[in-house]
Length: 637
Image 1 (tube, rainbow, N blue to C red):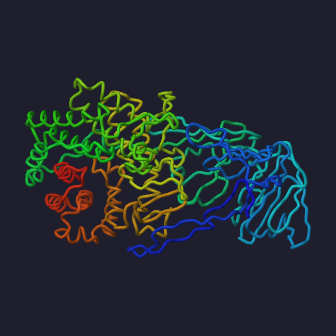
Image 2 (cartoon, rainbow, N blue to C red; image 1 turned 90 degrees about the vertical axis):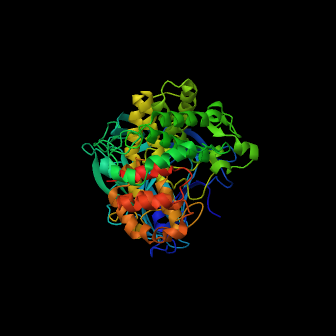
Image 3 (tube, helix red, strand yellow; image 1 turned 135 degrees about the vertical axis):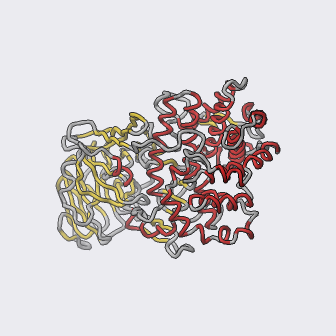
């Protein structure tokens, strides 16, 4: 029987920890929902029509309209990432009503008593409730509220009035928001300066003489240029990304945030690890012989799903890269054979002749597999028809395409390769640089949250998720490589910047070193597992085994992993979790399990020799060449 309207909830007050994992700590946490306040209207006796009427191109904000079912007035709100206020603009005679599931204890210090009418007039109101919360409400016009234990109801309707509400955390002054309440954020735009610096220009309306107050996440705190910003002492907990801090921009100026990312260059500059392999290990484990066997075997590309096929394409590409690597091979004929077979394996992909061809979707403006349409199944190919995991799937193809471009730049079918790879990039990483209306900007990447999400169109209670950090980074790495191979400097710069932003965020929110302060209660798990907007859960979509939970973060084995997964993290994870898994501690009894190959490749930081021995005996992941795994292990620091 709740009122209809805009539901305001401070999620962290409803946090519930999950049962303990095998590591002896909670497997994560989630949040129940409580309607701390609802912006409603007396006239909303039936559900109003909810409609998104505007949004900004970078996903920072959307504008939502709630229209009275009888055709009367509307409430309009802007929902913007990081906003400390929730705002409701009442129009066309609607009578504001703010209701709550809690008991209102006081308004402006006066006790609210059952069956005792109370009214309050003004433009600012302080509310406390039996949840232990304190809220402040601001109004652009003088308003009279009639208060009872569960609601504040205006005494009349308004043609145009804006109400704003914000939470006052314990220990903060009731006047904290006063200088900033009249400056309303409505969205934002992205500005990219170079491969280490970017900015968010917040759009505002109202009186901004006191500046814009906006909340930053922990990864912002490390890189935000603070010379012109003021820390106002506001700290609020986000749902799953730790403590948010309030920053105020200067008054009567552009509300601009500038982030200066990692200045040192990414250690991986191309297709290979940044160090030469230990040559004695390359020879001891006969990496060349392993490579020859793999290249002489059949190159099989699955023509049903683009994910499995993409993994195979990247695997074969790494084999050709090794054939071109003089630390392993000097036989030009072996390289030529590998390139010939890789190009042949690309044939149906270039012709778009897979069992379920790629098609252009005019509604959401993207390139999707037709399998979901043909099978009437939104989960086909891991949900790719409804935009799940596009950056994972297409990242493999972009890597393989970049390798082909590097190894055989004069290939007669290069125009076809350019066309399809460029299309996949437009689908997944279309940027303002291209001014490309055929695809949305940065489909999977959230520039405010600082990382990508894998979830597509299908609504999910806990919001969008990220679960495979390695594949997310592989996609961005592939953008850089394609930019390098194609001479597209803008794309290379974009790939480098996005890698730096994503590495920082994933290292805070999904991969937990012992010093992590975002999820202190679950740090011993070392990885979050499934990371969603409302929940973190030490599991995967396909099982709870710990080798799955940790191994999926290592896919695919590529040089960029050492940028994402610091040596400190890998050592901590190995000592806390990996070495205790049966698949590692008792390897001979798990030789048929391909997860073993990923775990041993990643643990080469601990011991190259042990890792290479085990990799020589293990069953490989379907996207991993054994020769490439051995070479990777031999190059670890």
